[in-house]
Length: 253
Image (cartoon, rainbow, N blue to C red; front, top):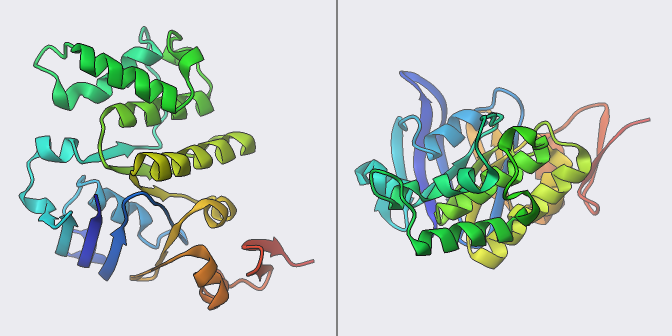
């Protein structure tokens, strides 16, 4: 499923944060949303998650106008993983992952055999089988992030939007999380968009970059945006060098 933005205007009330946004989140690819603080990344992500309305333009899911879809329909199309640290008492990993099936269960949330199969598959895909019986409050931040991704996989949405999924993680866990998400996009055909401040990781793992600047959005593969000097200009700083061949920023010595 594709998520297409056409001449989108985002903001709050009468305050426009960015306009003329045109981009497509493609099926089977992972895109990273990056940019300076205050550029509007959070506003764009919240608008895509349907947590706040757009001010103008269109959002289309496989050609369907998002504004005409019910909350129930959206819950089967868009999965969201937020930065908030989940800290619940008395709940196991498997029970939390199973909550991803809520759009498909009855009022009592009772799982059918097919729901339980989907939950176990989500646990397997994220490699958290050994954690399944653990209490959520005993997990590390990296483990919790994997659990939240598994919960979203159990929701079986073709679109997954993530807000800073590597925040608060150590470097090996950041790398593992980004590679996991890229693998899920490629192997499961998900359309994944990640808002992140981990610039180097985004450059090395993303299929597509969404560069959020002052009132605009530039979209393209990392290699193309590096070769045409877009990245160097976008993050220009007298204390930083950009190596287009290696897709790396380094501090000037």
